[in-house]
Amino acid sequence: MKPALRMAIVGFGTAGEARLSAYRPIAGADVVAVVETSPQRRERVRALDPEVRVHASLDELWDATPVDAVDICTPPAYHGELARLALAAGRHVICEKPVAFSTEDALDLVAHARRGGALLYPAHNYGFSPMMRVLADAVARGRVGSPMSGTFEIQRDTHARGVAGWLPDWRRDPALAGGGIMMDHGTHCVYMATRLFAAVPAKVTASARWAGGDPSGGVDEAIDVRLDFPTGDCTIGLSWVAARRTNRYELSGPQGTASVRDGVAELTGAGGPTREALASPTGDSTHRDWFAGMFADFAGLVSTGTGWERPLTEVVTTTAVVCAAYESARRGGTPVSVPEHRPAVTG
Figure (cartoon, rainbow, N blue to C red):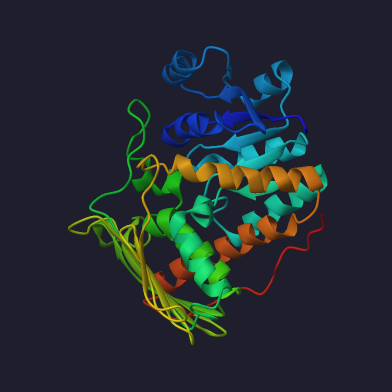
């Protein structure tokens, strides 16, 4: 049996605390440390798990606690700096979304990973969700066939709030979040779409509702996006100002349709119509029950040392598509082409 990866969680807000819980039942992972700048949150770590070492910085971590990898769970503004420091130190990195705010920054992070000989892995947990399993299986097993159209709709009446004691509304601060709902939930929709359509969209068209009506300094509270793929299109509708919470994911192709609406999956096509309830084991909004699959994928890549081009490329392409959506929205809905450059990666 391979030894467990010694992990450090960096940032102990909502995501970091959920991650500590998610790691506990995983045999291949051993959380040995947490890095957190807030004294209040450091005390929270000690209360939850007195055996985990707690540090105030990465430098302090490197000096005191041997680790193989770090899991970056801070607000997005700190992702790049922390990932670069960890990669330069030769540690593998899992990084919460969005990994980067610009395509250039994403490419630079990939370059840092290559120089450090370490894996940079995006925490794209929706790729391991029950709804993604339904949609991907429907494509792979011929229930839908190659997708020709998709619709993703995520409606919320507000943004997700952070922990008390440290800027609980940081998602509405563009300096910390990098954007609004497109940067936050839109990132999930983009990588889900590119996986299902097995391509990067050639162009992106978007229109947004901006907080305060200011696209230059506000955040997008709602946005409608169209991704034009070589074989079809996917529309994405996101809102933090909807009347109620709802989720809808739909795909159609030459063989049939697949949809997941608020946890109920329905398929048509070969084999006749089917209906399935996708109950979450925990019902937790942080989706910690999806984490085991994601970590197994990460650990497998680290163990084999191969296949790293997949997560590295997804870091870049996801960032490029999100940035194209913002550019289109700020230009009044003008279609924007997605840059063709891709990271040249090995491993």
